[in-house]
Length: 201
Length: 201
DNA sequence: CACTTTATAGAACGATCGTTCGTTCCTGTC
DNA sequence: GACAGGAACGAACGATCGTTCTATAAAGTG
Image 1 (tube, each protein chain N blue to C red):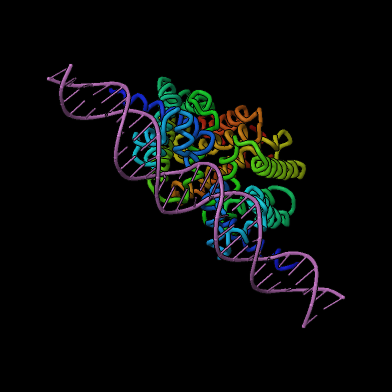
Image 2 (image 1 turned 90 degrees about the horizontal axis):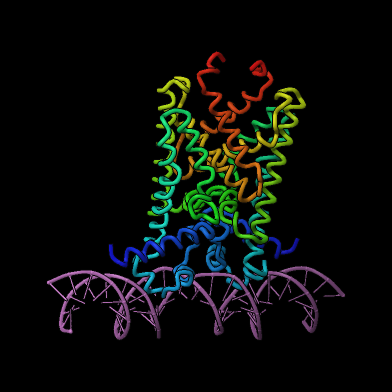
């Protein structure tokens, strides 16, 4: 629509990339104003408070995640193929989205996990929704007959999340070039354990 | 030795607990002085800079981790028993150590993973050392004959770290009461996959 | 007890924080 | 072309940041 929406989005883009480096809590209006070549007050007016800006960044992150990771994967037919597509997209969504400093969501999760308030609620709800989506996708793979009937979808989603997190840490902090390969290895082992083929124990 | 060492340790204790809640980057001299009932300058003199204080907190964390998690586990004979003891201690070391706000190390890892400097180096070296310790423990379980000879100790350590991270997130952010149970389930599955018994494919 | 070293306090520094206010500028409408 | 509304600015606010100084109080040593 108007011009306001446009600059607001431009601010959000920059805030998104900045938060990726310094964390959602590390965002500052001054720094952001400098980067966008705006005045502090002019920028501030678009959000009304710092917390609202941070919330907007978190919502932006979830939206991009859905676009970059989930949506393309959901074009695959239900089953293991779709599940694996999610993992593959997930592992490099920080490259796909503009995230020079790593996954904002995971960083925010560690940052706000014990600081009650709207920010914690936002990231919590987002991650709960992700777990639900993962579990449902697993359940469909069971329904399709590619995973064993006694598979626990939530446990499966739990372990997938773990694989993602350690992959991020290994790649970004430890500079492990094999992080993605290891993550896929772990995922394949997870799938193999629950696959119908190996049902004969 | 003298009194200086004593108050310095008292400051560090408080800083440790505080960092657990607000993160190592979120520490502030003023807040810490208030909590310890000291003057900002008096407290500051013990460290010389904020960064040095933060480094001291990270070193303290690693030391406590070694004391609370690794040392007791290493009283177990080498093999799967020792490995499992590490996991069990690890999963609730935030309760054992004084960490009201969760694992400082993981939070710092997410915080500094793309901010070069001594802080990043410290947490990186600590986590690398942990991976090494885990991998060595796995290797010993192989040597003892409890895990298959083709086990990749680094891959095993990689997956253990993932289990820990998702357990923390599930427990602290998502308030999942089953987090520890799920983590142990994942670990047992990991062990079963590499155990000599299941070598017959 | 005198003396030296160390530990702590207090005040102030410049910088930056988030936020508010009043004004100016731009944009689109009648 | 006058007018209205939203968008951006510049200046300033009080608070807090990390840090530096100087001075006082305490602890350790002969």
